[in-house]
Picture 1 (cartoon, rainbow, N blue to C red):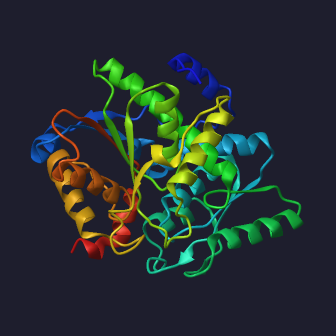
Picture 2 (cartoon, rainbow, N blue to C red; picture 1 turned 45 degrees about the horizontal axis):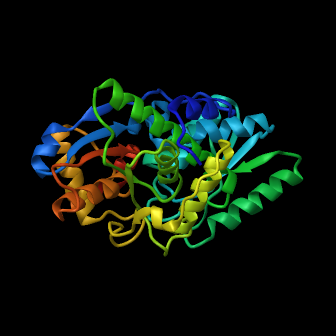
Length: 342
């Protein structure tokens, strides 16, 4: 396809159902002390931890499109299942409360399930109905079974997260919009496009950024740092991420040629496993806090940030590069991992 204009892309996004939830645009802050400390690429931080709803985070943007679509189809209950400290679940509980939808969460009884703290505590405060599953159970299967029970009761449920291709596609669309927002902000600051965008992402957030860059014909490298690997049920391969790119572009009315070779999604910074702090992430988080007064959580956004720090120190990025780190939030989880800081 030919390169789109920004106005064409904005029009395609505006044509989709959307529930307004986020405080937008989120800040785009230069990080001069961090840049100096690392001695490499010039860095900005795109503050999607500041989306407003329920302590913010990238899922708020995504829920605007997912829940806008759900409401347009008469959905009356949403279902999500993930780790007990899921950022997605916390932001969904708040969005559902704001929009008058019932929210069923199916957290795993993992190491951070008891006592209620962090994201799980906040989800409870928003009135979500919690239906816990065992730590080793399949979230996909549990959500499908819950949806079947609700349909039998005459309800119209929608599953979010893994197992729902439509929700994941709409989540990607949201970050195509975020890419457009970022481009507009850089232009307003008199800055050229970045050479790289780094983001903690297992699939949709990275896919949406990739779609935005490719549709607009921008030579911007989207570098996804995955907080999980193939041991986790929610992990998706570069080819599956590319498929989400194609699906998101198609939903917007465009055909996009993207393959696994176009996708840079690294599992190098997972550490021991998903949901557990990693030493590199803890050290990177401490550097960011000390230089820019910005916090990242130990098991999600800090791992993405550790990938950026690691790439600069390994010489993969140089002083000629301009990098945006997209901060996806996750801050309430800090309190559930207090012992990892002590």
